[in-house]
Length: 420
Image 1 (cartoon, rainbow, N blue to C red):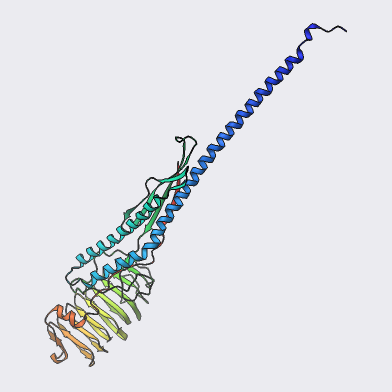
Image 2 (image 1 turned 90 degrees about the horizontal axis):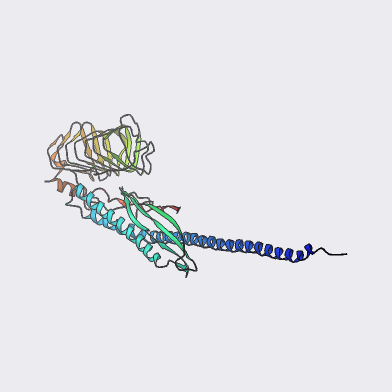
């Protein structure tokens, strides 16, 4: 059989086409594989940058918390010591001067805390490298004063992974914010239960010319006056008050509350206080710039309690047991007042006994002003308000206790976000 010339060489052409096709397909696959490998390397580098930034955030957070837990007790104790010294040596200070110096000590306490946090941040900044080509950088993390009782730590950490080319950097940014609520400076009534402050507070010199503290900022009272520090008004129910510091800027009248038993508390009033039909005041201290009136306290009456009054007072059928009245104004006893068991009545103004005043041998009446209805032989004369305070208050109990820093200092609120 004869072969056609037109079919010669077809097999060779097919083989060549097949070789070219295989080479093209292989090149495509090789390019895809190389591209995937490069992409995976980029993803890995980016992931390592994220890991570096997350690690940086955790380490800076730990550095700040270590500074907080390591220094908080020392800072509180140091500030408390300064406050106690201030109140121990406050003889010649007005209430405004005392408050200003107290604020200065608190602000110094806050600044020292900020310095300790920033010191921990700086020390951590010296340890930024994870590996030779993986590290993190602190751009702006620092502690700042964020308000009256707030300190804030915030800033950005960048995680960095170097590529093969030194100029090829993979970065990831994260922002961290830590908010510290500073401890409160609370008044002390000397009955600290151990849950607040490093001491029970040191007492300052009594100032009968201004007994209500300046710049009182506390929450409003509710109906439960146990273990509270709050501001009340005439609607505040005093029922079963215990371990409470109560501030009354507008005074208080309790005539609609009967048989009350108040104990282990301090009451500060800027205006008149009227107590009627109260069974007992036990371990109560009252400081009032307004007048004071007590009536029908024939139960246990005043027990182990002290009244400091920068005004006048009236008493009707009241018993006092190991208690004292120290006041700058006049006192009027409309009905019976009984002093027993080392009680003291100390009056810079006049004393007017309408019906009767009874005292045992251990109790004393000191007076600077005039007297009516009581024998001179039953009183001890003083020549000034200062002498009166010295005789009746003494060196061991000379006024409101110094405030105490709350040792229950909570950890910060922490927020971390990725920055695009």
